[in-house]
Length: 260
Image (cartoon, rainbow, N blue to C red; front, side, top):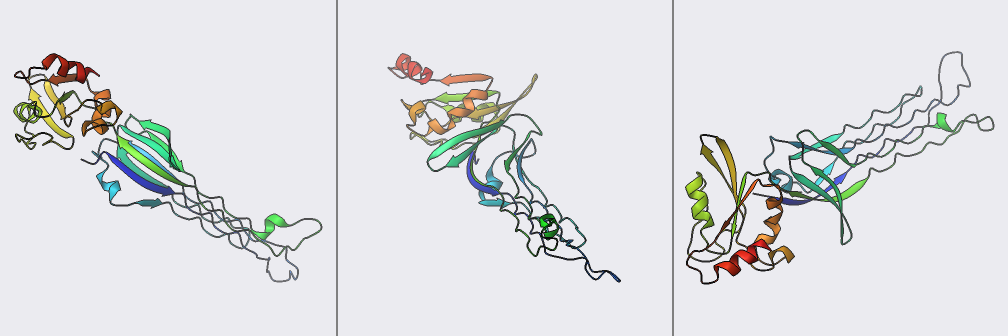
């Protein structure tokens, strides 16, 4: 399951304004009628339950909205660029990356929530915009502005009913396979589970989503081991199961470490 991706989003460029003059029969000196360019489309992220993870976004690194259209004669305004809406899972947190810093933008925790992440560029002005009492026939127009570009980091924090956490080789995968139809890798060596595993437990009271968090080691909250990047999923679970090895001589200190 892909729970983090880095993408670049860019609003569409605004369309150029044009230089044009009115040309009609019996009108020898028509004034300027160059229209303005249309604004570029913007990029939005929209949370939806039909998207389960961020895997589809990993295949495409850059997302660009449509450019605006050029202005036309007779002061016709250019067509606005079409907005780009990127579907993401409910629970996606959005950060903008600027140099080495990460800035929080939003937490998309509700179905249908939508945020703007890159604004489209403004359209350029046609020569009709530049007409003055002094210069009644301007031969200038301006180009459209480029759209806003952002580098984003998207991280998925899942909503689960139960999270199973524990030390290496404590039996988490075995318990998950017993509670659900999930078939995680089960082995006798430490760290056999290297990514988040989900299963659905069926009962008389309904279905429950169970997550196995990769094995934690001391200092996981500070970035050590495999489990630290998955700890965020514990924030949104309803029940945490601490799974301990009953044969361990350090069971109390193991529990104390998990509590940290």
